Length: 159
Image 1 (cartoon, rainbow, N blue to C red):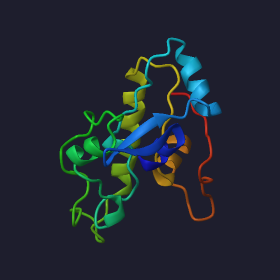
Image 2: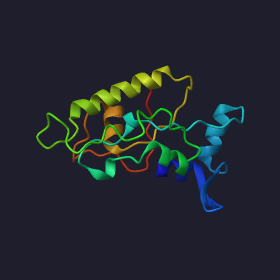
Image 3: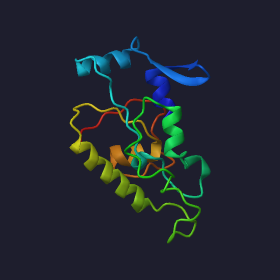
């Protein structure tokens, strides 16, 4: 979330609170604004299903409560998050020896996301996520240690 906000917006403090100004001067933002053609705000949606794998017992992958995120990032629509608390993160995933999210669950999340994307009215969508999720989304396979997505790169896919 912090990554996409810093790519598309410039952060500043207003009255002790975070405020964000669009970076419309950047080529990415200009392209996005021109793609809409109507000058309307580009929706930024947060989704639980695009989170990093593995969920569970890996504290950095646990998201903050929805209300706290909404307060911190007011330009982001958090209404698509499944719950106030992070329901995907748990101390121990049942049925897994290490208590981590099974790979099959990640694959189910990727499939659910593809179906969600297919229902969206937009023709061009920017997706910001993490390597294991994006590797499965783009290439239908888990990215192994020898094959890794490059950080902060643009990849293209059709759904």
